[in-house]
Length: 287
Image 1 (tube, rainbow, N blue to C red):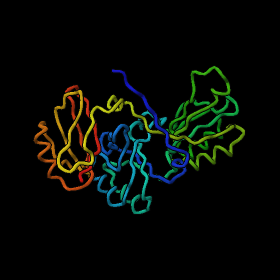
Image 2: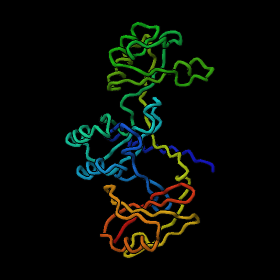
Image 3: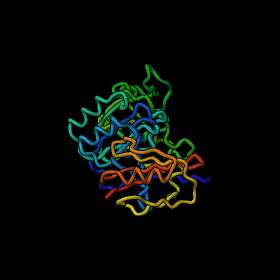
């Protein structure tokens, strides 16, 4: 099956809004749940981890989503973006949940908090030659001093296959630091660094489940039971509430109808598992 690779960038307005960036310990634990709503897919304020969902509920979080395309490979799939109540109490709660969350930072929109891009003034000055204590070493002492101060551990050409000198002078930088402080230091070192720019991410949906909606749920909102129209064979139905708690799980549609008719009014997530191994989530609203 052909995969669709879709990167969704939010608007300039959203980029300018304060948000929280978290890095998960394990990308499999705490990831956002994306659901089909009519004919489009979007994230909710829900993850696949009950503890994280409890924090979101307590602090009135409205949106939780992937922030992909981080330039440092080991962080792939682990960077997430939260919008809603950006209070110190919320930050403290996230920081304390260290079994699931590795780091927490306030940022603007989808800006990565630890990455930026620079352009060298001269391709031959500032190129990497190795590492020392996990920090990048270049052939320029002044740049080395900045990298040491801000613990830069990743530094590589942004466009290595280019044949244009101007493009080859761009390098991607990742640090264990506040990228704004690093950006200020690099911008001041104008004899070696020509320009700097911040690094924005986006939402990347590369799973086949995002190609198109596999089922149509109707009526939705529903008051008793609902129909599921699909060309694929469903082998399991699962309903969870917005905290991630499983309310029902069955291979029988009639059993699903019986359990869904007893649900309280509110929003739920219906997960369908198909016989080809794929799954898809759908937002359900019980009237």
